[in-house]
Length: 166
Image (cartoon, rainbow, N blue to C red; front, side, top):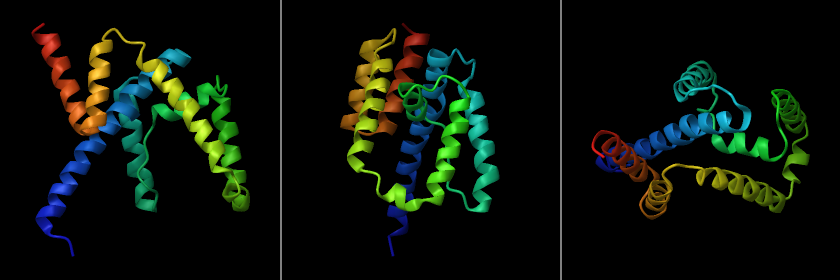
């Protein structure tokens, strides 16, 4: 069995990283992309509320915790989704795929890699559409060198300092 003190520290570190990921990716970045791509007036608070409600309702029935994500928005946009009908179509395709799991297991991973690379390019392109490019690059580099939680906290601290002091 793991040492309880080590487990507590690991849980705290994982929580900090996940909190940064959820706030940054699932709320803030998703709201920004929805505004940019679809002129949707959705706030990070609204996204956080819908994620909370979704998880409170679904997890007791055995679902894994879920969140929105800027990667999904960018992926759908990259491959042509421009209306809510694309969600209905994609949901139907997921239903068909669930019935034919042999088709899913036969899906070539190389194709998935190309799809993910295209989505990454789309997300990367939107990262450069900022009024504070040096800050964006510094926080991204810190995320790569340290971890996402540290980068998130440093970015928030810098933003607060810049707004209040500079």
